[in-house]
Image 1: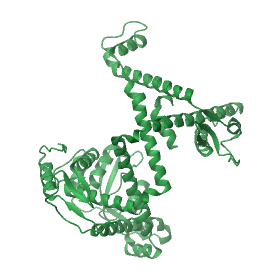
Image 2: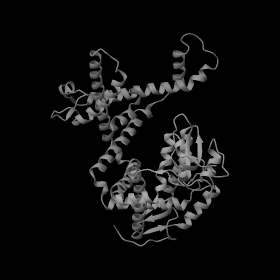
Image 3: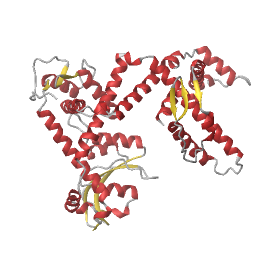
Image 4: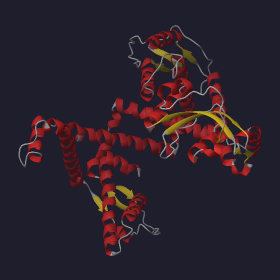
Length: 483
């Protein structure tokens, strides 16, 4: 449950206007790189976007090389996002009950994180004397330790002390909240509930905290999940009294967690962090991110659901992609860790050349001078699944091939094989055609939005930034270029 996840964060150690597009405007503020219907995209926003790309893609290469990026391309993406957000507001997607609930939960989550920082993290102070005292108590109690032992365990001691103080501060803070709280619990209902059965009673609340109700559904959801885990751990127990006691303990633990979360949430919201401009900026960014997703889900997706005619047409036109026993011509990258593989995949998705990148990062890379065709049936299920969905020229996701190394495959070609019946690949067809329809419809929709919008791009400023970015020269807005 989301609420319990946030609770763990806190006490983790406790368990419509029409315009014409304008390509450039010399009178624009130098700090403004683009305007979309009057909303500015400034250097600060670009800087954050580039930093995000660098975090995902630390091995940046020069413009035009593997993984190279263009500043103008980033600005165009940001313009598209701004157009989507503006249109989402126009059709009032932010007014839906689910959207409002998501934002309220995000505000509560961020408030709890802020509260934890104030009442716990910021109050932790570990002195050198604290570390020395801990060392003497736990390491020197039986006599002198070997030379160099203190330096060896100093970091570990500091971590242990930090955890202890976090728990102490958290326990004390929650204890004070409980002393001042008005808590009511429906004990009769709690005792009646059996996690293994469905409750059919009329009651819908198990407790209240300062007037805020804890829904029965929340309690049942958490208790059933916890009970399933407990049952898996204790399935061999024969004594029925012990499981019954454990079940009561489990109920108490879950209810206690829900009450504690409610107390923390109430205190966090009471402090009105939402009045802080920096806090609200975080909420605004989250809201815009959710609006983009809502726009795609509610505006674009309903328009792209493929018909049977579309699926049949695609199947017939790409029959070579739906065969069993076919042969493939491919190239692959090999990695020992998923982290390295995911890093390479991000570079590929951002435009890196497969062959260029493979020669630098793959642990096994032997460029073939001539085409070699291999029967697809000879591969493991994980690889064959990717080969089935790929078209010539496409790149796979990271393939976790069990005990084998992680791989990324680029399919160069397919041939031969017997066609698989349409009925057996209809789900796969739906995903392929649906994605193509989605990309096409989104591009069309954005083009229409651009046609009726006033868009200004400060190409002069962008050109200067792009030149400095390529050359790796210092930039006033601190756009960092990885070596």
